[in-house]
Amino acid sequence: MKSTYLILIIYFVSFCPLLAIQSESYKFYSSQEKIDENSTYNFLSEDGELVWQAVYDTDISIEDIKKNLIQKGVLIIESETDNTITGTIKPFDVSYKKQGKSSMQIPLYVRDSSFTGFVLIEIKDNRYRVTVRDLKAVYSFTNGLVHKGDEFKLKDFAISSKGILKKSFLKSAAPLLNYDFTNMFTTINFNEDW
Image 1: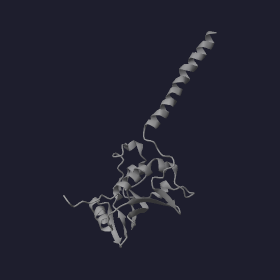
Image 2 (image 1 turned 90 degrees about the vertical axis):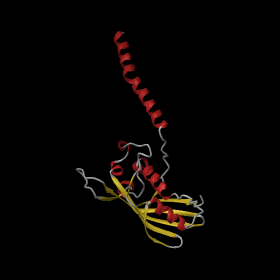
Image 3 (image 1 turned 120 degrees about the vertical axis):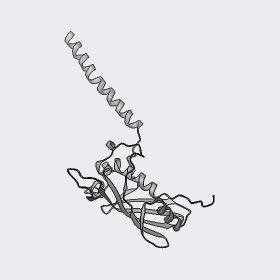
Image 4 (image 1 turned 45 degrees about the horizontal axis):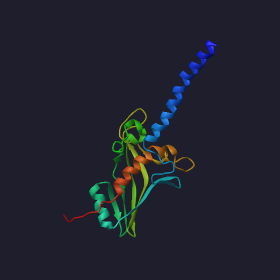
């Protein structure tokens, strides 16, 4: 009889804390930022290529958008027409600290690289659409696996062999990059009247 009680006590002492930890872990993740399982953070796969695309409402002209991009210093403008601007994003590091993340919470390829890509901005009917293609990353340092200056296409980490966005990319790198792209390409309404 004592051995039965002893077994029951060992069982409860061993497994009940695990149940409590498991239930706390659900609360822990649900109390942190919620990841939208259906969001692609403005990323999409077009014929196996990674594209970030967002549409913004605006009441400013293409000249003001251009001034805004020059003031922010985010784009090397290569050409422009009456309703389009094309260029290259100046290399930037992901601002994960501004987003409340530590270097241990983000993928190494995001933390250790600077990103760039081709940009097309199209303006139509008080809206503008920003499309970023050919996203590349350049490693910032040398370690046992990569050398400083090595370049890779971000699609290698973001697009599966079936041509769809990988869940791992959508959970880790996509929200970080979306935050930075949104900050880069959201216009500020200029008011030159003081």
